[in-house]
Length: 118
Image 1 (cartoon, rainbow, N blue to C red):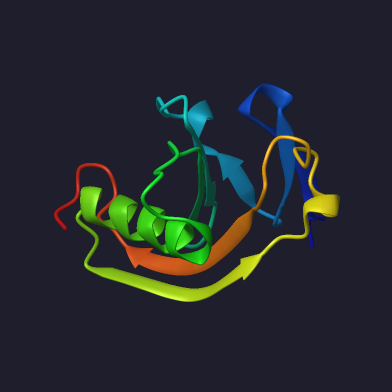
Image 2 (tube, rainbow, N blue to C red; image 1 turned 90 degrees about the vertical axis):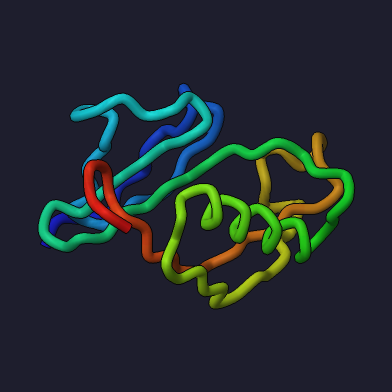
């Protein structure tokens, strides 16, 4: 089995540990500057890391849900399912001096891929 690997994101601003078989989609097609997109070479799954603009009208857990649901709406997702939302400990973040809170949301969206019908 191929081992996990640390992969630099957004020009090395931070990194993520990717699962075995993850392929950088930007090697095949253009990806917006605010996204890092990876796909699995065998399954039909993808992982998207997206930098989003601050929305002052929502905070904390609700901000994470707002962005996830907003992206799902823009992408015309058939299903938008939040599985978990939890705070990240600031002492574990490289950006701890820059933010007051950080959240991680895990969820699923069913979205048509490029050139496919929703």
